[in-house]
Length: 211
Image 1 (tube, rainbow, N blue to C red):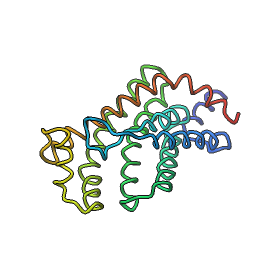
Image 2: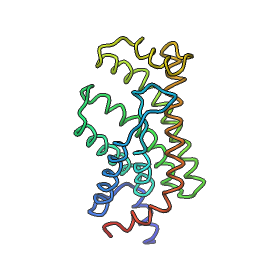
Image 3: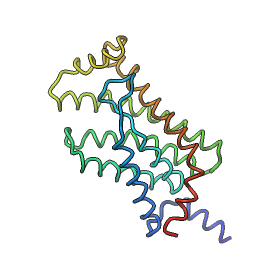
């Protein structure tokens, strides 16, 4: 009876005690450091930069639940915003938060209810799909128009940057399909593979923290 109660209680959400706060703090710091190590990829314009900070956020989401994942993502983005500032009054960073959370929430929610290797694979695949869909929508309707306005350039200039990488990119639609979608697919698959490789090795350490 007690065991069943504890399981139900655990599924209700994150309990923010000293242990959880310590875990979230450490993971947020690591995620921030990983975000600082961002780098360009060969198939997208240079202003799309890849980092592996979502690895830490996903590990936190898997170990502590989706609410913890959201908090880690939020703290990471706030730290980055404080250190680097913003050219879009924080709107670009908010959009980045939403895009990344689409993967973290989808993956963590599915994995939370049945913690097996098969479910982990399914959850990460669902998270990658969410990352691609939400990423494409946010780029088309928020990020690209926002960057064009922030840097006082026409949208065609951004499209030209995509064309320089891939001549098949000729308009916003092909930019999204041939640059944004592949970028998020590559990011989702890479981070998912790293999560599968590292989670079982890291989670025992995480659960012993502040114990």
